[in-house]
Image (cartoon, rainbow, N blue to C red; front, side, top):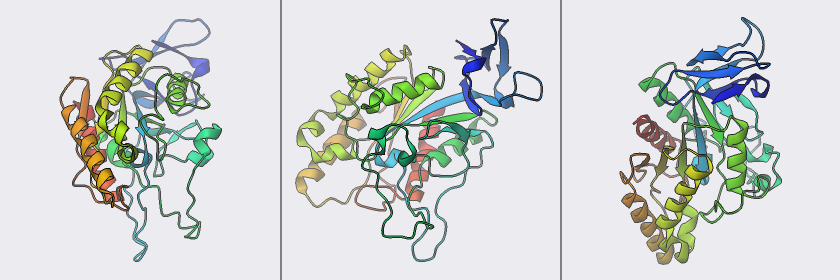
Length: 309
């Protein structure tokens, strides 16, 4: 594909051509220019809007992809979140602007221009706003580890996760970008160029509270992946998912449903060369089902290792 220079936003990551080390950019119907992996690049030497060439990963799912981990220890005030050490980590954030990704949060749904994404946003009413305790995510560990593996490749993240969303909330029939999680995700992918390196998926916890969905979760997720690849015209799109991990649930029904979803996800490990799963059972919790900052960092590293393969 060829990017139109007029459509490129400041600090945008351009998805490199498959198997190549460059992206092509066109301006004013003139000849195409190839820009190699790295950045910041400028179409004109030394000035203009900066952009990068690398890999774009979409972050989709619910709580543990959005990132709700405590960023600080309430008792010691010690910082728990991992810092971003990758110099070329960029984020297409919840306000749908590209920016350098320096630290969490990776998702700020309250800043979304889409009303339905701002709904049900929890505030930290019990804690002074200056503390902002929540928001640690797996994103810093993911980009840092990818940089450790392949140094110098810019990574763009697209924030699409939604707290407490079920697999039904992600259904693919509705593609309305202003009322559908799936539609909003497709619209964001279109806005960042239409082609991506892959999707990171961490979802399933909310489906443990519905026995009917838990029973068929595996089929629903596989259908979701197939439809996404078709809609993006990327039949070999890499999808790296997380098997839901530890839990602290009182209801025996919910615990059984949780295990059914875990089993369904485990069956998908290694099922396809373009679908990979990672475990999270040994990650620490902050609540009954939301991972801690350290747990999210552990999962982020595993996602990066799987994504690299």
